Amino acid sequence: MNKTNPKIHIIGAEVSGLIAAQTLENSGFSPIILEATNSVGGRVKTDLVDGYQLDHGFQVLLTNYPAAQKFLDYKKLELQNFLPGASIFNDGKSQTIGDPLRDFSLLFPTIFANNISILDKIKILKLNLKLKTKSIEEIFHEKEISTLQYLKDFGFSDKTISQFFRPFFSGIFLENQLKTSSRMFEFVYKMFGEGNAALPKAGIQAIPNQLFENLKSTKILFNTKVDSVKDGEISLKNGKILQSDFTIIATDPNNLIANSKQENLKWKSCFTLYFETEKRVMEKAIIGLLPSKNALINNIFYHTSLETTQNGGKELLSVTIVDHQELEGTNLIEKVKEELKKYFKIEVSRHIKTYEIPKALPDLQNIKSNLKPEETQFSETIFLAGDTLANGSLNAAMLCGESAALAIINNLNQK
Image 1 (tube, rainbow, N blue to C red):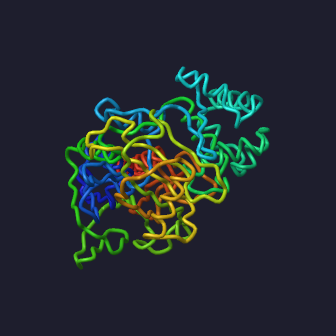
Image 2: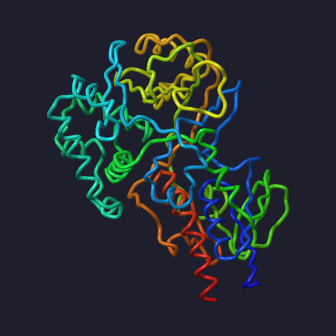
Image 3: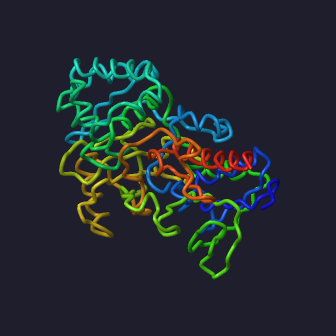
């Protein structure tokens, strides 16, 4: 092995792999990324269909993510911010609640919204203040309970949980029982409370695209599928074998290495449907929630309420489905259209595209904020990266990519 110019391969041009490459470059190394598809981003992708930007699932960037602030240039991304709140729909009518301290226009709608009691509104304020004074490290060292139990212990009423917390966080955690760890709830709630939810003007894929464009000495081999990995070599699907001094697996390792630490990894799935409409029922850039227990729809959002690089000419509506109730294809589309009309009074012009995302978020227990570099090491020369190692967030994906790269750098420095 040439210590000054070792052969370092990264499998997967997902966000974690791109951050690993950037970290290695910063220390003078020139890694090679092996990417199975023809573009970067992994689960963070945007398609252009009929002039509309369609993200693969309803995804947002929380601008207060520490790793995002470190690795991304927000100004170049031309971030478009959501209003810090939500419109809750019941019986075709909506009420808006939000944080008036960050957007004054939300003050009176929040005060007069009667679906959440004054007492619970005060508790929401207390929760905001509590988490502002609590560090991320403190959050991830707390005892884990379910998000639902956390909210009950905090004193929120069943009505507020069902009207706001359940539909809002079901769309984030992609499960509607609020079983997700209270650590993740506190972390996400803190990020929402201290920063903005935003989308790049060109869509969510602008994030990995920017990371890719920042790379200078990294070589990326697209359409290169890996079959298996072991210390010292990588076997490709086409039969070719690559010699590798160090390998970072920044994608699902289960099919690549034997005895993976993540063999029992489970995933949360969702559907996202995009529709074209003539007009918007919500003029401002705010998410719409549906708290009805029996409904398919979890949330809706008009992407054209934000400024976008591409626009198909009318209004673009996304609909997120957490539990598809075994409906698929045309049946799913028609049922969603019925619910849009019934609950939101939305008439769609046409269905544009449906995304079924079987691996939308890792379903994790004992979640962490990050891994120490040495914790990413799987074997003598193989290292793991990705949000599946810590928690299902863009922040964790970046931090774990950085940690895997630092582990290799530390290894080389010791040698």
